[in-house]
Image: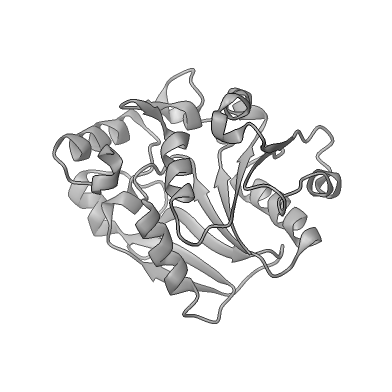
Length: 234
């Protein structure tokens, strides 16, 4: 099974706003709404899990009130017990699901989630995507999955050349050998170090995480000058 895991537990301090980052509005929608739509429009995604945290309780409330999530499974993690969390989390019965991670940090929450999914199956393909990537269209998601299935390794990281960031004045938080992690990755449902392929895609849509006010300015520039995918204006 191919499951999208939307990471929506970050504090978003660098945006200098009291609004939780997944709910930060760009144009007429929150960031998480764009990402959810793109995942829903994918040809390959079979289930969607939104992973929130104690830092994003308003996002939990937003999802609970969203018509698309009316029948979704919601499970709050009060004891940080991943066995109980996933056992009560019927990801195989519902298309939309959301749960609360401990919120200790991205890597810690990732490990938390992998441990839980592993309890159910060691063979599921998990596509992790950050809630601050509104420009990553369903077409890009599907192309990444198609590339993933051409390879034998259980994991794939998607990276963007640093030159793309430089071209648009984006300041990446991490750079490795002139490559920037995109916030889109694929792992098998096992909590262990996984051998990975690196997929390099020179697209601004993958380079632009909405982390700072400067990123918002770049996003507005791209939108206003029709420099992003047509889907975004629909």
